[in-house]
Length: 279
Length: 186
Picture (cartoon, rainbow over the protein chains, first blue to last red):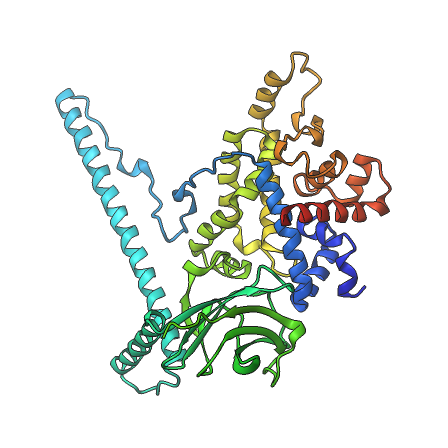
């Protein structure tokens, strides 16, 4: 059975429900990853099933999730309340004192636990931020020589980061929303094009998954002619595309890996026109 | 590539991103699941347990399971939504089997409840109240969609329940879901 045969088989509907045999589930999962068209069809089935379920909930109020139930083991200390129970004295006067002391102790350990959690959260965040910066640096700044000082790397990274921010915020940058065409009406991509600097950034805000042999390619349309603006990965991260001097519109097609010289029009996923007369 | 996620412009966070977060115990996964899937999952839970308050409790329990058992999700065996759907459904079914639930539904349903010890199994799927959707699908297709997505029936179970030939189940499911898709497109 080829992947195309699955589309009308009724098996995809049961696949979304998860009620097929393990082999069938695995087979369809593998095919779905290989064929974006199949994945798109399954998406639509899933959307319909979800929408049906949502509507059947009626005017249901979602619960607020109890955050404490989602702590990871490192997030919280195991707090055994019996640790802090004091031996109470029979003498009534001393008894009150002991209770007061116990309350204070509980209170103090509460603060200690709270501080501990805060500090470990901060530590984790710091590691995350550091990782993110390293990634930013290595990808954006290119090959940072191994012996470069950390300061140098940091400066460079900040400069590039600022460049991107400036690009996005610049008055002469247009944000162009590329909307899905017939092939997948939910598809979406974003282009940030600065007419003055000619720089182009692209983000696949919602494009169907692609297999290893294909890549999305961005095109600028000038007087009806497509100009290659480079291939990009299917990620909602901002990516630098080729510089473009003039454009009436931007479009994205799915092409064999490495891109094509001319766009494959049957695989035209999204299109967005450039607003005129803003500069 | 820049690791700047433009979340404000994103309608949907892709499932594989949520899976990555989930597997690395990143709480952004919870927010995304809540935002994108909670209402659908609650619809399924509510269809099983019938009660709003209990549905909320079941959903909280199911979310904890999803969070704690994230490493059990196997990307090669199906989609994230399917996995979460199964967890929610099973948690809901477990809830209906609890003693308290049985007692409550016995009191609510009828006086001669002696023989009715399993409230869940005795309920026919057409008792699931879906008023807004009544006109979308004919009753038999409605029942079919609910057996598939709310109760997780296999082809064999559907064939037994609805007394239709096993070989026709897939086609019937396909055409019912197609009708739903056409309706939602309007």
